[in-house]
Length: 322
Image (cartoon, rainbow, N blue to C red; front, side, top):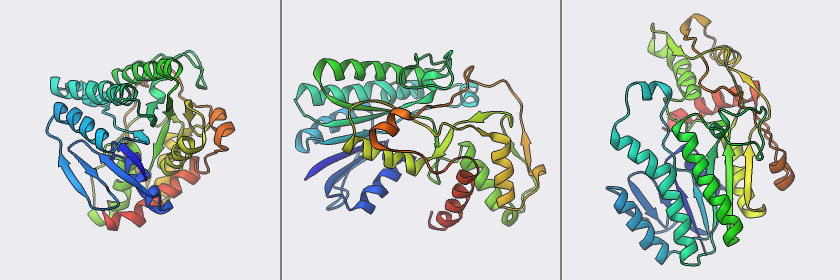
């Protein structure tokens, strides 16, 4: 029986992959690492261990890897602060945790497997923000990485390390360069979840306060997260190791996205207040997914207005269970 690990199991992609494995009835020991705990044998006799600090995290990984050598590792864990959060000052502990999760931990996981000759497949999730200062738009796997934020720079460091290791040690590492991908499981601070939640509950809460959103003139390459997670699963099981862009290859205007959500909930535009400011990224982030299409014959079905409708429908269907 295979041992499948998901790091970042409480995040959007981790939850969606767990649901996918249940739906496909995959026979495996599923081991879930979240920020504060690890669940061993998710499908069977659950055993939970608490994680109190980074040292405990590393120690647990080493001991569990020794007992349950991984066959497949999905590394979804990430710590990312918005521009507004940085303006409010991030503590030293938060920055240290960001460095641990985004860089030190995935490198440790790879090195442990390599040092102990564990031939596991590992998928590491990178971000379109590695291209945020690039001179090229749209971007592909060959586009030079030029990040403009700490998060993007940390992703590039791990990408470079794993790319070098793939060639030197002939390992099976996959890097998924993810553009915006949304679902019901997005955290409340993210644009899509914030907007849809606000509109869905507006009438019942009799809100008078407007929702503050960012520049309506912005354009985003935005897709449906369940499709992306399914593609990552198929890539690891059927595709060749390497870097792959996950994107829709289409741009969604934020103002139009908001209008479609308001239309779905029959609300007027005056419930939204847009704040205009200079875009955080100098480059228009637009991904080319041709390599992924060639490898596993994947194309996203949900984008633009289809995506908006699907996200709203999912929210209405799932909110009563959460």
